[in-house]
Amino acid sequence: MDEKIEKLQNMLDESQRVVFFGGAGVSTESGIPDFRSVDGLYNQKYEYPPEEILSRSFFDRYPDEFYRFYRDKLIVRGAKPNAAHLFLAELERRGKLRCVITQNIDGLHQAAGSQNVLELHGTLLKNYCVQCGKRFDAAYVQDASGTPRCDKCGGIVRPDIVLYEEGLDGDVLTRAVTELTRADMLIIGGTSLAVYPAAGLIHYFRGKHLALINKSPTPMDSLAELVIPGKIGQVFSQLH
Image 1 (tube, rainbow, N blue to C red):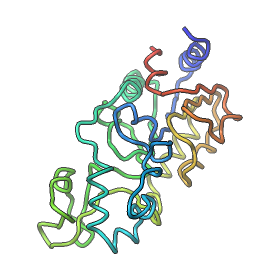
Image 2 (image 1 turned 180 degrees about the horizontal axis):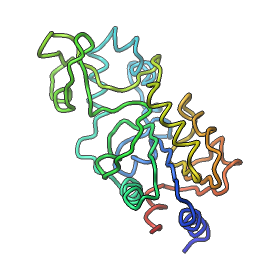
Image 3 (image 1 turned 90 degrees about the vertical axis):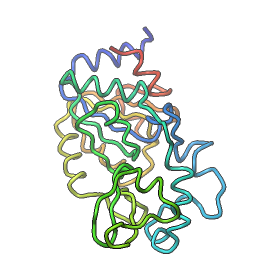
């Protein structure tokens, strides 16, 4: 076993309250593109920059354009949990992993079986009418033509995700901080730690072991006990 993998395994073995904090890199091995890599969404060309399309003001002004982007780039039909999702779900079943804190909106952690998942940026699997609040599943929005409308009041239906210019859910943030302050080990994986305020949450961790797994360097590398460059699914597939 590789020396770093062995060290990660030993850290896990002696920890009892593990928290995982992850980003887009956790889902790229399931075929879902990330945002900031060389071939990510932010480096592809559209009539508008993705950051603008995914803002609240753009959604309000140009919902049809928002939904064209949504169906083209945010929805990846047939995506399945990969080795990273499955390993984390198994750690939770063993009572070792206390919580997954994710910046992703794809719902793959739940699909893998994880129960305690805190979605900082919401989820594409839930949708609601901005006018009356009625809830809709993912299929209702994905299968609609143009901008989906509420079958009750006619209002626009939007995904329950946090757009640019919107704040994070206060309850989710509070629960994330609580989990981080109680953890004895934090694994950060598949994230550049460039998105705030989400990335700032990791500073609440005061436990013993901090491991970081990511393909490229992050601002937290110097503070981590262990840094493993690479794909998180490949790393987790070597653990037990």
